[in-house]
Length: 297
View 1: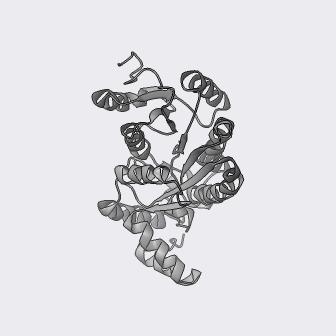
View 2: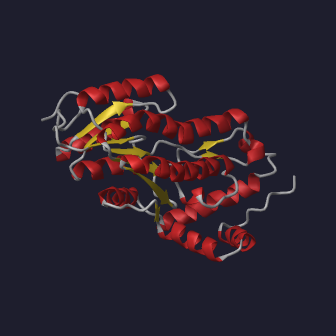
View 3: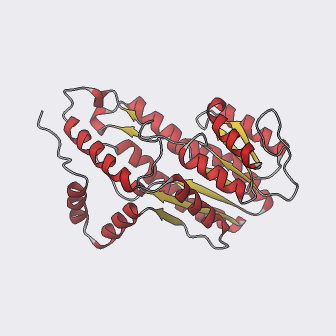
C-alpha cells in the first residue's frame, strides 16, 4: 500500500523492527535505507530537506519497501524532538539507529574560521550526539537496540587538509567506544563503521573553507595534491552498497564487533599503522598521498 508521502507500506507492524537512518538522501545513507528495508526493517529515512528524498521514495515504491522519508535536521533540537514525536506515534520503537549525517570540510587548520569548524562539529559530531540522546531512552525501555555510527578510516589516522573533518571522526571513535561501555548493561550495542574512500557525492558536496580558496594560501599546493590523490583513489573505491552490506552484517550479528573497516584502502592503511612507528606511518602517508608539503609562501 502506498500513501501520498511516498511510504511503500503505510503502517508499522506491531512486531516489525524499526530502523532510523540520518542523512539518507544519497550515498551511504541512501544505500543503507534500501538494504535495511529489503531485510524487513521498517526504515525511517531522514533528510534535512525532504525534497532531496524524492529518488529514495521512488526506489522504495518500485520495490514496495517499508520506507518512510522524514524531515530531520540533526543540528536543530526542535527538529529532532518533532521527529521523535512522529516516530513514537507511528512506530513506538527504534531498534536500529544509523548516524550517517555529515559532510567534509576541506582546508588546513590555519585557513579555516572558527565558525566553519564549529559548523563541522555541529553536524558531524554534535548531530550524532543529539539524535542518540533522544533515541537511547526508547531503546533502554525495550532493553535492546543497536547504535551504528558512521565514522571513517580517518577516525584512526590523520590526513593533511582535513583537520576539522578528521577531528570529528576521531571524536566519533572515542564517543562510540565509551558508549559501548555505558550501554552494554541495557542490552544496547554500539558499532563503528569505518569506510575508506567511497564512491559517493561527498567530495562533490565538500565544503571548502573560505581561507583555503585564496590563491595566496600557503597550503594551496598541498590541497591540490590531496585532491589529486583522492581522484586516483576513487577509481578503486568501495561503493555505498558495500558499506550498507557491512552495516547489515553488523546489526545481524548476535555479538557484533565494535569496529568494521570497509575497503581495501582503509584496511591497508590500518595494517601499516599497526606495524609502523608514527614517524614511519607519516612518511608512508606523505608518499602514498602524493606530495603534501606546504608551499613556501
